[in-house]
Length: 98
Image (cartoon, rainbow, N blue to C red; front, side, top):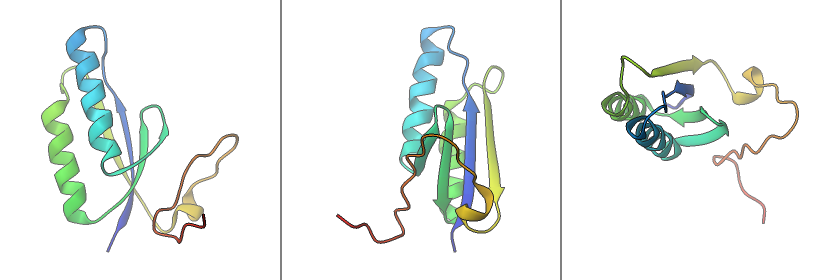
């Protein structure tokens, strides 16, 4: 069973180490979900994938300077997302028509 997760992060980028952490956090999230805003990802994960991603991200961030949040969202995406303006989300679980 997959769950909908919203991941938000704020990585301090005042130095090169922070900018490196920011890139690593984004790359890790891209492997599991879709970027919907600069530091916000929507993911549809199994519980084991969620735990693996959390573990990976917690090894990257600096807990004294950065912020990382995971929101578990109930139901389907259509029930909890209202989008105004540009929306580049693609549902990879639905058939793609080319």
